[in-house]
Image (cartoon, rainbow, N blue to C red):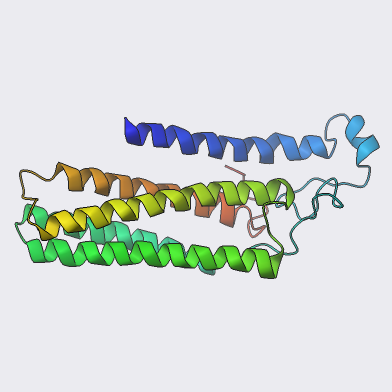
Length: 216
């Protein structure tokens, strides 16, 4: 039930992203009936990613957006690799090989920490070099909300794996009694799957590289 609640949590945020891209941005540009929008923002043309907001004086848009084939692609490789390493660690439990369990669990934790470090640098790069901030209108807000909440879940997942590492070093797991580790690994796979969705819908389709691609 915990992971199901997490699925619903992120589904709500992906739904908000879909709503913004499919409806809200176009409505701000007066698509359909150019009523109040045409009077308030006559020169605004809707588009995604939003490099210019309807009221740029109050909410200046970002100067640039993050290239998805750089830091985001690296983080994708890191998390996909971590899913592989945590699976090998699980095999170590089933085989009764504690050394294998510990070594590959350490590798998984290291990959998670590197991911968080890269994301931290990505945020610094966005704020300092690209002008992409929480105040950059709808695009900036959705970007930081989605990736930020995911980063918080990766942080939690990494902490859970560190706890599992401590238990593994004390010999708490065997092939018939390892539910705690399995639950932590399921959670880790979950945050990996969420990241793949973020990479596709926030970074790739949000970068303008696939102008003809559907939003979802």
